Length: 55
Image (cartoon, rainbow, N blue to C red; front, top):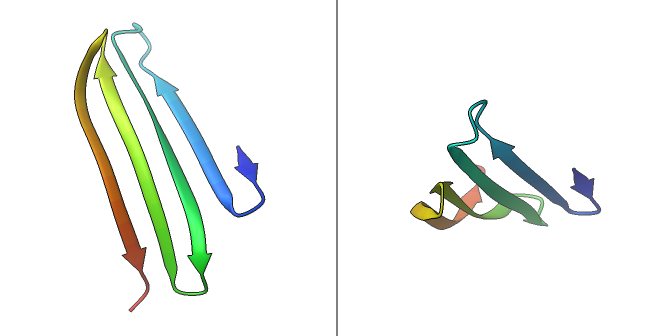
């Protein structure tokens, strides 16, 4: 889903065991920030928060 300056995505595996979400937000012409997480059932597998810049 695109909402103004953000892309919001969600996934669930075919068997439903894995799920997650990520948001990517445009900061300016050269930078984006992303935050997300992934789960296996109710167990958190990972989470992240990064700033990405064009070089």
